[in-house]
Structures are given as structure tokens and as C-alpha cells.
Image 1: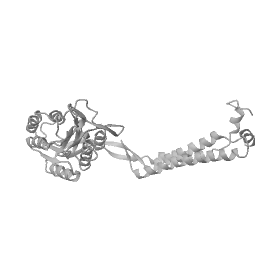
Image 2: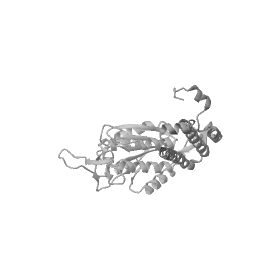
Image 3: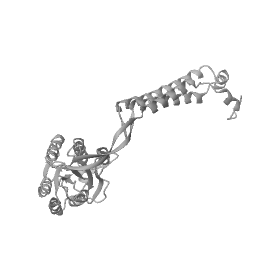
Image 4: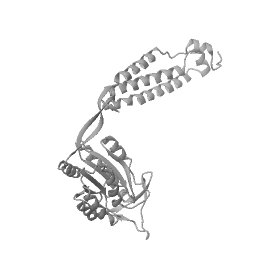
Length: 345
């Protein structure tokens, strides 16, 4: 495991492309200027030791020096001691709707991206809780098992899209069924399932499954994403809207937020419904719910000690810097005598 202590220094990497542009501009300027004095054959005889290879090698060496020095300033740290730490928290599973209706843009930028933003902000406000992620459409798919690694959770979250599941629909019941396998401790009472969906195209089994989950101690909170007015489902190619999804009568499909279904599911599982239009309100309500719940103690392995590694990168950077100073732009005499490329001397 590693950490980057001073990420602000990443901006310094822009020095390398700037150096490349200056190097190329200087090279072509020299070429144009030399042509005004005479032919290439004459110039080669006047400057027999001039080496483009050595000039390029010096430039590459200088770029490597700058790159390693910047990494040294960022100061990567490597975890050296793994400890088992006891923490208290709630197990939270996010079930995210990835059906095609989530592409509707009645909320900006679209329902799916809005869902990702909501989950990301909720995770950012967690302390020591464990999280898991489920993706569902016509079927449910485990995206991330229960973990305390929030960085991994957000990474998996961002990779979710409407093409990851071929079967369409909104099988909330399957997401609830799958979540029951995420909570492996039968004595655990602090189980939370957060469903983010527009509630469309659900089947009638959702309410029954929610009631069964409630009997196992799982509280379900639903977050509705979309608007009651609704919107069409865009069909895009390379980010450009080509058309909109149509039904069998060639009419444009208008998908709407179904709050009634989401409320019914949440009430059956002794949870609650939250409208997802305002991110701050959603985060605050979820935080209040989690704060009021009993916390379960569990063990998690974490790196407790990290050691600085900047000295290695600074050392390598200084080595390349010294090498750049020692390298000359003219041809090396002993290599020239070898005449490896059968050049006419």
C-alpha cells in the first residue's frame, strides 16, 4: 500500500512537455538557420563532431532528472506495518440502478451520473462504516463486497454504466435478495440497504422481498433519482445524441420517477424514502439515520506505518542531472573510430 503525501506537486510535470516544445523549436530553428549558410554536406564537413543523437540523449536525460525530482517532491510513502484495528460502524450496501432509463437527462447530467454523485458524497461523509455495491437492471450483479476501502468503492462506482448488464428492467427484488448475502453476520442488527433508482419497470415481487429482508434486520432506504415530469432516453454515439428510445408504436418513450413504488419498498423494510434532487439534503438525512443506529465492532487490517521514499527519487534525479552535465553534444571520439554505421569519414 502506498500514499502520495504532496499531490500538489503533480502540476510540476508540465515542465517536461514545455521542455519538449522548446527542444523541438530550437532544433527546427537551427535547421532553418543552417540551411541559409550552405548545403548539408558542407555543414557536416565544417562541424564533423556535431551529433544529433548526443543532443537528444542529453535532453532525455534532463527530462528523466526533472521527472524523478518531481516524484521526490510528491514524496511517495509505502506502508510497512499492517495492523488489525478494531472499528465500530454500520454495514451499508448501495444498490444502484443501471437500466437504460437511468440515461434520462431530466436531472443533470443524467440519472446514473447523479446517482454516482450521491453515493460518492455519502461515502465521503462516512467515518468507520463498511460499504458494498450492487449493480442491477433486469438482473442484479455484485460490484463490490463489503469493505472499508472507500477509495476502491469510489473507483468501482465510477466504472458503472448502463451497458454492464444486458438484461433490462428494474429488478429491485433481485438487488434486495443479493444484498441479503452481503450481510454475513446473523447477529448483526445494523444492516442498511440503500437503493438508488428511478423506480420504473419494477416487478411486483419487490415489496414482498423487502418485507422478508426487514425480518432479517435489514433496513432499506430508497433514493429517487429523476423527475415526475420525466424525460426521453437519449441514444448516443461518441457522446452525440443520435435519437431517442421509441416504443413499438414508434413513439418517444418518456421515463418518469416512480416515487410511490420506492416509498412502498422503504416502508415495508422499516426504512424511508429520500428524494435525490438535492445532494446535500440526501447526505444529511443518511448521516442522521446512520448516527442513530447501533454500531457494531469489527476488525479491519490497515497499514499503520508509512515510510518516506522521496530520497530514492531525489537521488536518481540528481544522478541523471549530473549525467546530463557530463554528457557532451559532440560525437564521442572512440565511438567515432569504431564507425559502427559505416559512415564515410
